[in-house]
Structure formats: structure tokens, C-alpha cells
Image (tube, rainbow, N blue to C red):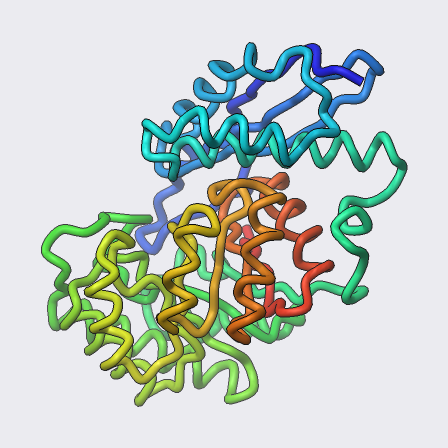
Length: 346
């Protein structure tokens, strides 16, 4: 079998009216990049290389098309060799982020081809099932909410639908979506509102439902520590995710020493090499690589056993399209140290 064509398709999904706390519909913020790899035996594999924010997926789609000639004529069964070929080709670009997002979609599509060619689900090819069901935790369950009372009611509905864990960023001042890092601070009013929202959610769901906080890397060390500890003391949050921008490991060490809440990082860690130091130094309690950013199914399946040796559970990040959630699901079902798979309710 040989690869005959590689294409990328950037689409704007219909998210069913997903809104922020201001009631604004942000359809143009979401674009998905699907990757197709065609073969001379009529089998087509599908993958995903979506990125964020707006137009990030256009960039990755362009990148996928640019590497087409590198893959034409190759055997799609040689997944590891092709992963290394692409990864090493782009080390001069830093080999992280943009290059690994391109590789991820191609890698997922190659695994799809192998599954279709053998007539077996991909998790069988990864070692078989560890479990029959995958635990999923809810995100984006709070569309249009802006007050503690509204979050309280939305949280109750989410639990009634069967969820036992939910994630949110309660600090609305830092949105919509991401303002990204500026001075790393939040106003007193913004902090108090976020803490009140979290307390309302905890009151709504009780002590047995996990409440996960996503800080989106917005804060400096002092602010991250203060917010995480306050939320933990007042609402017993179950993790505080991405307290800082991802670049500064010294800063992460400082937060880790001072923070009482469990830590989660990994969404913006790319490849096993980024994860290795985090694990070795004990800088997180949960690891959440993204299958469409970190290097695909192949790389996520290598990161998971690394985390297992430190007794750290993995929880694949998922905030994009169906290729992302399915790629993460196949690894999750075949992985011992699995916490939960994120999914967005829209």
C-alpha cells in the first residue's frame, strides 16, 4: 500500500449556539482542520490538526498541505518512521507546537488507515482494552452563564445528565475565551466573582462531584498561588490547571511549592521531551497532553507510560473536533493510568 494524496480541510463547525458569559456567539473563533490521507488501495485515513485561536487551523492546514510531497509514495503502515521523518525535518522550526500539530493530524490519519486495513479498532493495535468504558468530564456546560446563580443551575443540570466531574474557568474578567497573558493579574472584583461562582458550583454539585478549574495560563506566580489556594480552601477544587504560561519552568516550580490545590498541566506541552522534565521533577498531579497538538496517537501513547512510572494519571485535553476526541479515546481505553477524557457540551 502506498500514499497517493494528502489533503487538509478547514471547516467552521456548527456548535449549536455556544456562547460566552456575555451571550456572544463566537462561531468564527472555532475552526477545525481535518486531514485525509489517500492510498492506492482505496483506503482513506482521517485525522485532525485543529488549533486555536481563530485562524490557527488555517495555518496548520497550510502546513499539512506543504508536507504532502514528503509523504506521497510512502507506505502508510510505517507510522513510526514517518513520524520521525516529519519531526526531524522541522527541528529548525523548534519541533514543537506548529510542527507537532501538523504531525498529529497525519499520525492520526495513518492509524486510521491501519485500523481500516486490518479491520480492527485502533485501541487493539495499541495493546488492547484496559476498560470497556471511558470516563468523560464535562466542559463548556455553562454557556451564557455570568452569575453565581446561573452557574449553580447549570451545574445542577450537568450532574443530572450523569456527569461526575466538570471543568470551567470561573474568572470571567479574563475572557471571552483567552485574553492570554498580559500582566498576570486580575482585579479584586474579578477574583471575588470567580470565587463566588466556584463556591456556587460546589454547592450545587456536592462533595462527590469533581470541580476542575482551568486558569488558561493567565497568571503570574503570586496571582496563581493566591487564586488556587483560595479556591481550594473555600471550595475544595479538585485541580487547578495551567496556572502560568507554559514557557517558564522555574516559575512552575515556585507555584508547585506554594500551591495547595492539585496541579494539572500538559495541554501546551509538546512531545515526550516536554513532559519528561515535568514528570521527573514532580511538577504536576495530572498530565493532560492533547492528541492533536503533542504529536498524535503515537506520541500520546508514549507519554502515557512515562507518566505511569511516576503514578501520574493522564487526562487528554480535548477542546476541538471529533478527530481529537476519538484519537484521545483510543489511547485512553488502552492506557492503565487514565483519569478522564475532556469533552465539551454544546
